Length: 314
Length: 314
Image (cartoon, rainbow over all chains, first blue to last red; front, side):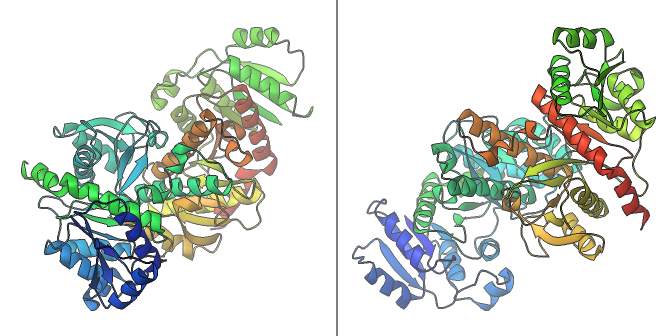
């Protein structure tokens, strides 16, 4: 298994990324390779500096870097030798089984659409967030920012995408799919969520349990939470801020500690022909390491293949 | 000052409401009267049972009760002698300066529109939530559930309504108005929030500071947070659940303790010709007491008059 990792993406790149790759090699067996993509001389000198002598890390040269503030589409067109463009090129050519980056989110999303592309039948790939559950484990919320506005049919597909992910990657048996709403009753919500409710209810391929509310994020009601990217993004960032405040107040607890973005290391892009994960801009070495481990799980589960089969059956 | 209180509304009515009224009388001076509305014999026997002998509480008979699950418009039409209908009747007739209820939220909202009505120029009255701030005090988020879908012009008005409330009731000097969004940059968001941004930016009567994100709810960036009722409802319930989880884990802290709905006791309806507050269905005596104290502050600030003046100037 080969996991490509953008060495140049993130506020603390390349140092934090290279350190994270080193942490990951300690937990991966000898069948794994981490492909560190970026400026070869810089990466190699860091590996030397950190005393790396193993064989699990390969360096792939990419001479350009897409900065955090750049316009995704323009940047990808103008920088064909950027670490993100090269990473997706390898994913598309099946020279890598997954691609992870803590760099420009928009470029990661656009790069996926340009290279491996959306799975046939999927209207809008989505970025999913992992939500810690009180009973242990994680649930999934999607979308968390790729699609601000979502029509009812897109929300319905998020339910299906999340169901397949929860089943095969999170290994939850017949995962419960809930629609984030302002009340539990069927008629509640916006025009869009009301229509999405009816579509999800009629969908025989998933286990739709109805509306859930803001208070149900962490409980056992739903394993997969469906919402538009505007709502999911606000929820995710609010949860992050709660963690930060608790941390500042030195209030520690095993449940709330899992709010830390470092715990899972990144948000997967779901609905594309490949495995890609977007890390937080501020990613630390621990976060990078956990993003690589998350990618390993996605690859091992053969998630995109399951998703293709799901949508091919329609 | 006369504050009308629905004795029959809420999961623990009438006992919790009567007890809450008693708590409030201990904190109000002799110029205040609490008008307890509901089944006279029931309320009077409770007052007797609790040993009340003062003169600050008056009982107003209302023979009917609107239950939590009833359809608001139907219930108000079919139950003209319900505590909610009678309460709004008194507010309209200026026999009460404020009306508070922990009963049927929809009936409280529809009752306001039927009786005292929206202030001229205001398209959609809103329910506002009070958000504890890390630096102390509270900010305001609106809407939190009255209007699931909101057009850009409605969101703009929420900014104005919140600005006037924060200035006159929360007594914040030139309050900062922020638009809840998925990124800080001007072009971010849904079609609706993008359009609302431009309207808020062009509005000279408020202090618009731009987009804020889910992580900014509790910090100092904005005193007034504008969003549609779908989003605000999810945010508010998520905050409530965080409080509940911390509480269950016995993790106490002065900041997080203010997440407790009891701290302010209710959410005001803003944009109507009068002062009305909706309490939580599970309201305890402490919550009821604090709702009455919140109503006192609203009345003292002459909030609806300020709002009328604000919109009359247009």
